[in-house]
Image (cartoon, rainbow, N blue to C red; front, side, top):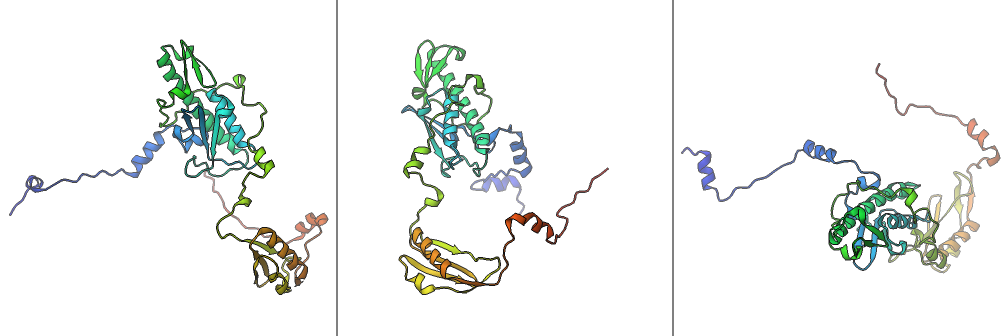
Length: 311
């Protein structure tokens, strides 16, 4: 029996259609998207950086964390400046992997350079969106509007908070809205109380070393007095009898202690240091002669990489 393709299609109960995107096509589309400055380049959605709240506040998001450098204060100033709202209205969500942009690590001056740049441009664009909505409501041109603490004035008044539900920030940033020139800054560059200081002064701030997890214990390591020294003996019984000590750990010449609380581990380590007997090993050089010591050591030279020039 001869069956042509038309007959097969007629008798088929359904047809499945599938599309596949080739890798070159996807890469070409990504390459066609304009490059964006700062962390906008890898976190392009406006609503990933800023939210206007009907309750009269602004929430900004950053992937950078406060390490004592005052970055959350600086970023709040940038957001308030570009939006024309009071600094006190700005709330910051920082380094929350479920909510904030992925900006990698927090290090050096990269927070202002990358996160600050992204927030400056995102807030400038959000302001432009809000002013466009305000101009339509008030029946005037955007150029005829003025803003003071989130209140837009033209032929009448309307606030950011009233426009919040209409302002669609679920879009990619364009980085086309021009931020304020420095000459117009009234918040950025002004010295204000840092947000992180009160909690640090009162013991309310939680740092990495303050992290407490269920069942968590604390450890300390006893270092040898000389490089390469061998552990001969120590008073294990006395340390095991100390409050909170869970275990004394020895592995060859490695010596450590585990305790329920941090101060208990610290105290147990001090007893181990006093009782431990070591032998062998070499003394470290006198710091005053460190340069001469380093220069006297045998050197090894090898090529890590080589480039070939083409003429």
